[in-house]
Image 1 (cartoon, rainbow, N blue to C red):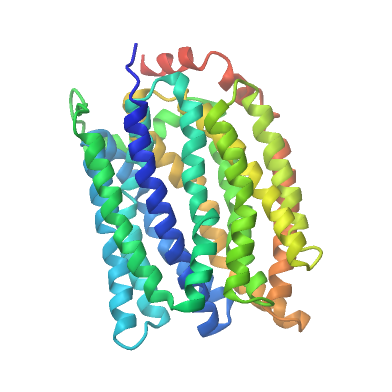
Image 2: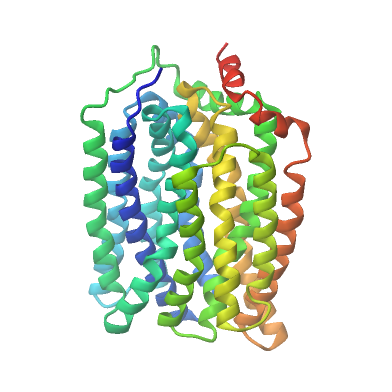
Length: 418
């Protein structure tokens, strides 16, 4: 039986929590900076896309590296070197101001190194925890991810009221040192599991696809995840310009924090109790509700209703992430987790690329056509995405191969190793 190392996981999780808060400060600050500079949702979307695309494109080879080398070292390199892009943006601002091009370069540099982090982090969770602890760990991981929405916006909003975006960048840079220290502490005393034989790199790359394609249910879930990220990416891109079109940065920060309290509440419940079954049903219901709450988010034009529906929307996400994580993780062999998660991350997040590429420009165009500005265009797109997400969610529980994933998943994972 695998020995539990939940204390080491908590150290690692604490580092990711701090990193998430720091990254959220930068993301919020740059978003406000760009919108004030350009007044365009498309410009905000372009920066988000260029900060995201390198991580996506490199996620598959990063997964292969996570199965071939020390995962904790890869996490340290990824976290530490991703600070370089933020430092570049800060230097440009200190030398007279950073334009859109400089910001795009900086976030791209940061994203290239961040690509090493996700497969190694997820694989490390499998390395150090027992199967019974996966669900609880997934809830805490979701909570750490929500910190960029929960704590960062309100902190950034108040800091921007007394300073400027450079202060947020400096704080983010310092958080990288803490996260690297946490990964180093976990690595100390934890044996490095080397593969018995290192197969050729491109064979390992191909192996990630072969591993997830063996289970039809896993492939369906990954495909559904890609569609879901399309609709959620539209919401992610357009929520800020929708609020900023009629409010200031401080109001935006408070609204984002109130909305993210929903993720905190459900993340805490999952972190303490976890889920005990009915993963497919819970996945479908949580995503359907997320779509309905997304529909209500801009529908009434009041900051109060924005906060209420945003709170309910974020409350559904940890349940959906927990179910997806469990259903996929328990059907993949432990020794192939890095390759598999790299490939899964690549496929499932293709929806974000589409959303980031078209939603900003489309919202700007709709705003011009309606004559009511980018806020109205963003509102229309968010509502349409919510309807589509709710419809897609219902299909998640229909295929038999998906429902079978939660039936004796341990035996299925073993069978894939044979």
